[in-house]
Length: 229
Length: 130
Image (cartoon, rainbow over all chains, first blue to last red; front, side, top):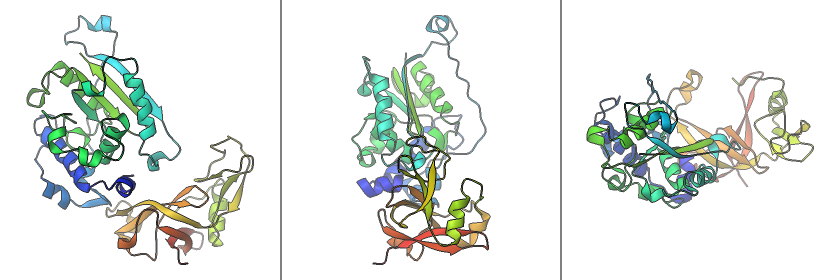
């Protein structure tokens, strides 16, 4: 699908490099991250191809691990030890016609998910302080950013500049290091990170005053969660 | 090697005769691939294995550098492409008789057949020569 995206929109491979490097930079601030050694664009471009055009550094890790998320009513959560994080909204949509060769890179699905997330809500895309997005492979981040509406369709490649997606940027992305650098927990690690960001527990990688955190995943079943204080 | 079963056997039998056949729903006329026992469009269980033009275009492709399958080790790096047939469905296959630098999305291709064993012939695709 990334090759197709390149064909349609001229997406540069360096966009994937920026995403991989950003993940690693954040992971260096996360004691739980499996991969913490910093990488440069040269490292990225010199990393070996696995299934070209994707390189080793575009791939999620393979690791053991565990994540626990406790979901309960707001009422019960009130007097628990940690401050509650609220599920503001959630969305889910499926597209099984072409599995992982879907022409629109899950765009229509994610548009439906986005509608579910923000319909009738006082919180909009611009209010998201931090985004934790499923990155089985780095291109999935591009597809998700487009589908949810952070950037116009086809324009995610030039949009993901290091400044914009870094801690302190317009949209801090995958602050834990994501699946390519923290660990591959099939999204659960990202959800835990979103919760921790909203609780203000992220130490050096904390996004200042993070109130609204997004978790999202582009796939044949696309889904997203909007978490808030 | 592909695993031949009751559902997909007609596909492989046709390939062995150097014919490309895929399923077409006899209720609504939709083509489909990969093989399925019901039509994903109208859910009818009735279908035929009908011959297709064998022409299509490269939807997208990758070049495999990783040794995932020992049987293909000697071919590394090899391409794996999704070919969109003129009839609509997409097949996963290889593009042959084509330099890797000439591969591109939407490249017109036509089917060719690679006899890989006495039982199995693989439909592959090459750039259309017309």
